[in-house]
Amino acid sequence: MNTYISIFPIANSIMPTPLDRLTMKSKHATLAFSGLVTAALAWSLWGGNIFPAPADPTGDPHEWTHEELRRWLAARNLHPQEGDTRDQLLERVKANIR
Image (cartoon, rainbow, N blue to C red; front, side, top):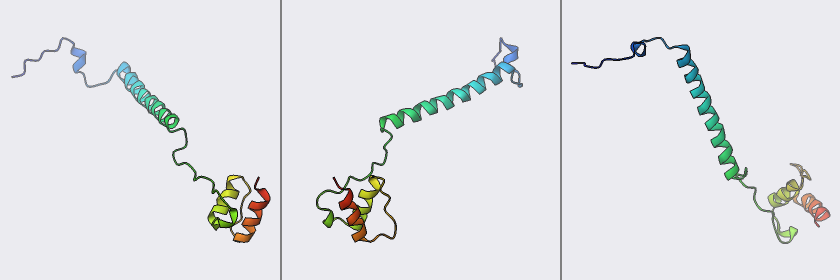
């Protein structure tokens, strides 16, 4: 037995009103804005550096691996070439080391 009686007969209508459509659009805009704020907060908390670069190699460059020599040069925008040998990379590192 349904004893529910609505005092607002328009509330039972099926067609959404312009005000209903506006609130639904603003709801989506509010959710989108909240998502952007959350993303910006997460980015600022992580400092924008989610995957930090490996540290520079230390010690004598003669003991560094081929990849460490390439990484050292790339970190200083000296653009190591793919085909460079270890000796060529070592000479470039020694010429640019301070």
